Image 1: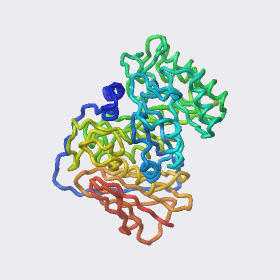
Image 2: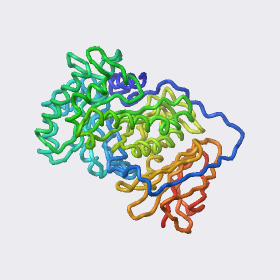
Image 3: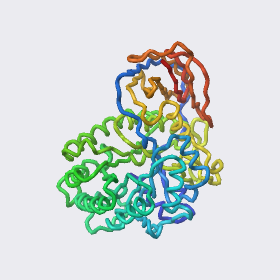
Length: 482
């Protein structure tokens, strides 16, 4: 909670620090992991090629951009987004969305950088081969303002913007005692939000019936999930879905796991996401009636609370993306493209510099590498493209130890991609692989690797289909042919 509150308040300080503080850490320690005596890590990984979990969605790998970021449309950005497999880009940026007025390109109490207008953003998105997801202004806007944006985007300009969120983290409007989100409505209840959400959906779909409308929910298991606020008869999620469930097309949650250590953070995707996703699907099925099969799950903000620019977050990123997709999310959007730092909390993590910068690319701050230098989460995310592509099928892969995460994809041509993530910072892992529903070729496979503190992805022909060595704190993708 402190991180989210801090993130919003920082955006109101002014142009000099709005970017640098937009996502602040929760205060968790970022000390290097203790060096234990070297111990061999052995793991067995079982891949069930015939057990489909989900398809990789076209918009699965997403990214946030914010209008306070003067470099969001830099000429290098489309290529960097495309190389990372980015299929969705969210605009105009988190809590800023509830103060942003698209026609005047202004934010109440906040800074808007030059060159971040909607049309310029759309040029970047199109050049990257991605699609946008737009957060309409609920906090200080109106259904009419949102409908006018739909008209401009899809009728006047023909952009075909499909996905529209109604507000950002609206439950942070003070209803539960904490306020970081602008909300000028006289009533801050979930009932009021849901009632107004229906009005937004009606007005916006009157302009373009093909658009998809998203409702803000609280993240299952995270504050203030399960709390009934004053003026409501049930908690936020049940109230919103019971009123607006028949009128929405997707639900929205954010995931910022609090890792109290590097190992704790790296266990969060498996520890938290399956339960969160199952809870959301249960709520959708319970409250949206016949509309339930059509209601998707969008995770429009994710990031770690610490170790942001170093190897732990590089390992966390693909595990986070893929675990959400395996559990039914159609988009997972990283916070943020550029976020910046005030250089006041620079630390060393696993032999590398952490700038406490929530961006996936450097903002070029005085203590950072040059503008647009990729941080480890970028390289980790890009490893997904080595495993599979939109339309390929995510299949079940299980590891015998929590020190190794495994993900697998059955490609449309019948080949297999397997990702192995070694979460041990000091020791290589010897991984034995077995397969059901797939017989790999006896040829030596191509293996892509992102190593600890590396600045690029390497490749080699090495190991075998049944045995691979995964270096300490690294990601490898094994490409297998039939």
